[in-house]
Image (tube, rainbow, N blue to C red):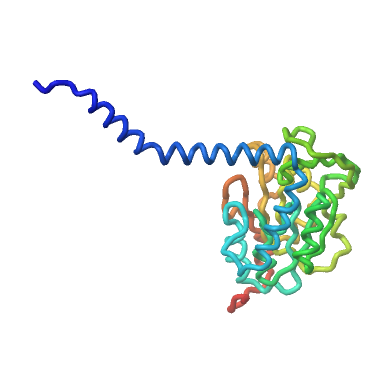
Length: 271
C-alpha cells in the first residue's frame, strides 16, 4: 500500500490554483472595473458627457457599422425599408437618447435618410445637432396630452424618464413641455414615416395614444414594452391594420399593412 505523501496535496492544490487563477483574476478585474464605473457615475456624473461626446465622434468618423441598435433591430429596419421608394419619407425617433450608441435610427441616417428626433435631454439633443445635422431635433417630451411635466434625468441618461414610478438614480429634474406627437409634427413636411420608434421609459403607451395620425402614416413601428399587459395594449390600440413582424428583446416590430400596400416598391436598393 502506497504511503501518504503530504507533498502530493500541495501539488494538487498548486495545480488547482494555477487552473482557476485566470478566472479569479478576471473576476476581480471585472468587479473592480464595475466598482470604479459605479463610483464615477454616482459621484461624478458630469464626466459622462465627455464619454457620450467621444462615442458620437468615434461613430461619426468610422465607417458604417452593421448595427448600432441594442439587439440589431436597425438591420431589420434597413433590410425591409430599402425595398421601397423612400423619397419624401422621414423616420421619427421618440426617446432617441444618444445619436449613435444603442440607436434605432443612426444606421438609417448613415444610409442617407433623415428624420425627426424627440429627445428631452438637452445635452443629448445637442449631440444630435452636432453629429446629425440633417435631422430635426425636438427637445420636448411626448405623451397623450399637451402639458408640462418634471423630467427626471438619470445619472445614466438612457434611464431618464417623465414617469415618477421609475426607480432611477436622479441627477437632476427639469420641467419640460409634453406634446402629443401628432401636434408636435403636424406642420413638418414629409410624405410618410418610414420608421416610428418609441422608447420613453415607462410612458410608451401614452406616447402611442397621442400619435394616432403619425401611426397611420408610419410604415414600420418599433415599440418598447415594459410589461406583458402593456404589450397586449399595443396590439389592441393598433388594431388589425398592423402585422407583428418580429419581437426582439423587449421591442415589438410592426408593419402597417394598409400603407405597405400603397407604397411603391423599387427594384434597386439604396447605396
